[in-house]
Length: 320
Image 1 (cartoon, rainbow, N blue to C red):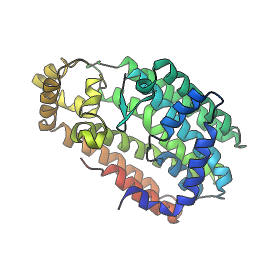
Image 2: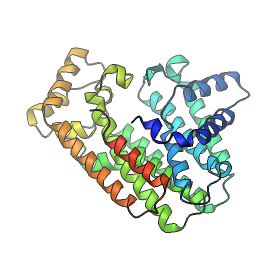
Image 3: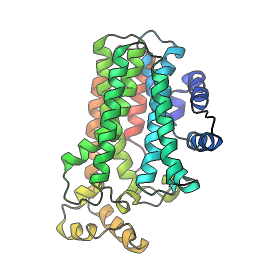
Image 4: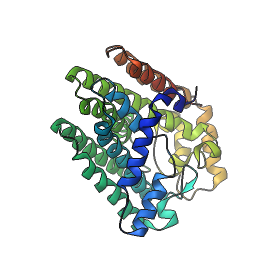
């Protein structure tokens, strides 16, 4: 079953979110409006808003309230991608030109800042102070994660703990907050929204590890960019860390640089694929997925819980 079919019964509310996203990023500046819409219309699974909606289904669900959590979280995610593309000097995202490629770095940075500011403006509509505490903490951790990624570029001496801490901040906490904020906005009891946070955290870890695996196993058509792009940009992911346990392969990986000829990076990717690192990484992703499914068992039975289970299994088992 395709991912979007799993939550197709939410399509009416997802359309409300989509319309609200477009309305929120309207700007007086035509350039800012064009750049923001370019990012919005580039696509994406909108998985974070979906998690917000599903979290809200455990309480007093009202789309007009829930959207004030769903839209800001997606905007924060979008803004972080715009900034990432500047940092990584990326020309493509999801097969489309990035803002920095279509315009320039300055336009991209201002667009990311604008989208981020609009997210903060909208979240003030949520009256529960806990929601603001969760979101502000998440933004702080996300920012630290971005800095850590910059600091760790081409740092081949980092360890597994560095990697897990970084993906926790860059990916997992935003998904965790999405699950939790929907529940908080709908007034659920503390035990439920905390369990939803834990579920989202474990799913987020599995999601990012799977992405890092797919960066080596996916095709350029599937990825929207050449395979091994993360390594070429100096981002040391779990498969790379496991591959470097082989001393000879470690020496070769440490020679990676941004301007490395494609045949040379392809040879290194091939050796990583043959090293057993992918299989080890899949086991770690599966471990986090199992923990997410275990947390789900502690939540009340409803349709949203079944959907969360289906989504978690899909995320953890994407094509390698």
